[in-house]
Image (tube, rainbow, N blue to C red):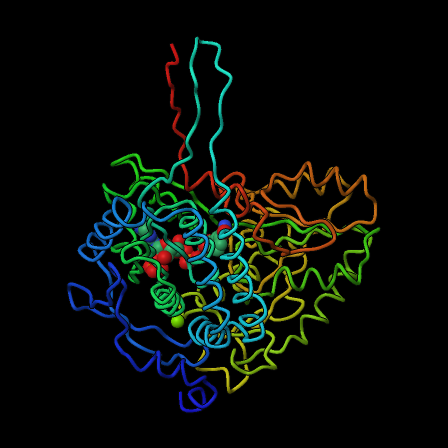
Length: 499
Ligand code: NAP
Ligand code: MG
């Protein structure tokens, strides 16, 4: 921790010195009702960063009550324009503290600082600004009814109190995806960050207060899924739950929502096909494949982990890919040279290394990687080697199950029909990639793949205006763009009798 401390911004050190970190309920920083805390760990070293108060049922209940009171009280009185100004102010404050956010994210999650600084933080700021724009543009319609002499119109109203449960892979950005759209539409929020990475959400909560967003509008309660998460998704006074995480947890959320029939939106996992045709720009495709799998240590829901390569170029392409992957520089996230950091936790390390063993047993050939990192300075952290598996077929577990680590399974295909057939042979449907210089083929494959996003001659490109979400067991509902407004508003018809 000593060397890490020296690299840290003064304000990060100050933020971490206020331990244990309290949760934000009704505009106040409070300990958990039980007094219980948990530790959040630096995955590069295995050392405890700081203790955090652990929310449980009672704390969630207080937070929901605060959100309800804010929703029925002060927040309703804010005009659309005022909500817009608050979101813009929040974005400015995040921008002012960008470096601090990036360090905190890297410390807690492990991701390379160049990624936190160039991706997570700017995308967060952009997201708040984008939804600030929507706050003043949400409206109903007048309707041409034939039933008689009526003026009939719709109102688009907020849903109410929203529970938001997020994972650890993009802790700040996922909080932004959830909070920005909810507030733009006029809702109040109780956010439960993942237990592995609560810190940037807590810092964001400080800025939410500094921006002048009224007490109770956003409550941030770190805690564990089966306790705090379950209390939130089962709460009878929560109107909607927005969840991002594993599909098995998604099922639990649906069951828990049944009590009061709350609305649910689910952003779940993926096993996305990335299809390389021999007529593609193969140099660019190679770079695209690396980004699609190894960005964020492979802990990306839409990672292109099933790499389909046209048979005649399979060996050459996979060979070149593994040569490049071998040179990825593993290291501590705070080191600016680092290209790949540790996995988020010991549990995640165990999960990924167990899949490396499963792959080898199934007959996949590790062209590179295939094990824990061997470097002596990486032994205390949760580092795994970036891995390219060749000789995979689409039925193997490493081709069907989400590993959520830096592992790609390369599979050959014969022609367009075979690529589409194999690409769709999965229970997931989050994303897909296609690399070809033939426009007709690109459109045909993009239409045929069952996935919520298809990238052609690119991968992992995002913008706040594009809808993101899954087909099949990758979930339902779309975040991003105008589509997220559907999640956070409900429509009322008003009939005025003019006779
Ligand atoms: P996870 O285990 O499902 O956890 C996600 C969140 O749910 C965490 O905050 C977790 O709490 C909470 N949780 C766990 N059990 C719960 C329960 N019974 N009731 C309510 N909440 C509960 O997923 P993860 O391992 O953190 O994240 C990885 C998964 O997320 C992958 O499958 C990935 O593909 C998916 N993901 C999807 C997207 C997308 O947009 N589609 C984006 C990112 C990640 P604790 O962890 O604190 O206990
Ligand atoms: Mg951590």
